[in-house]
Length: 209
Image 1: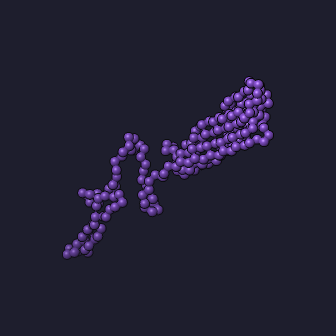
Image 2: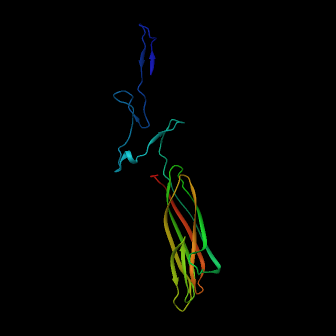
Image 3: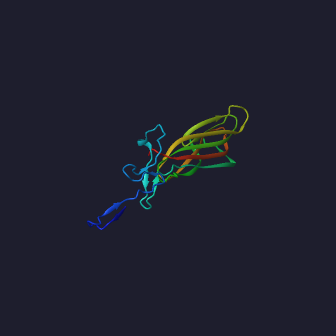
């Protein structure tokens, strides 16, 4: 806007304005006939715009427009294999912890809560003499029981068990999750020769906090 004149009768004030030059998503020249407006598209989704759409924000430091932060996804896990040079006798009691494994799971999104899927897997190799038996479990849950009713020893029979569960994490938070490998109900000299264990976690930003 420009102001000319000195306010006298012979030289009154004259106010003139130049239409603004627009670009980068703005249209119009600021007049009543063509007001400034954002150049936007048509909402193409079946869901309601007012309910689920993100927002645009003004950065007070730079004056730039900002959108919602991006969503994050990550995969984290830990796994080990232990070959027992001396076979481990299967405990006679139920649900005895014979090994553990832990993993630190972090929500990679500093803004939103995360939802995750936790996959726990235990793999045991049993040696079962005739008339013996053994149980394998995860975190207080008896997963299966193997027994040898034959006349010959079964070497390194395979027990593979897994569990899937859901967890949540606050923005940027880290949680240590520990899994207990369990065995029990051992009889007849049953032993364990190998322990394989793993924890895997898939973590996503959660839109609905």
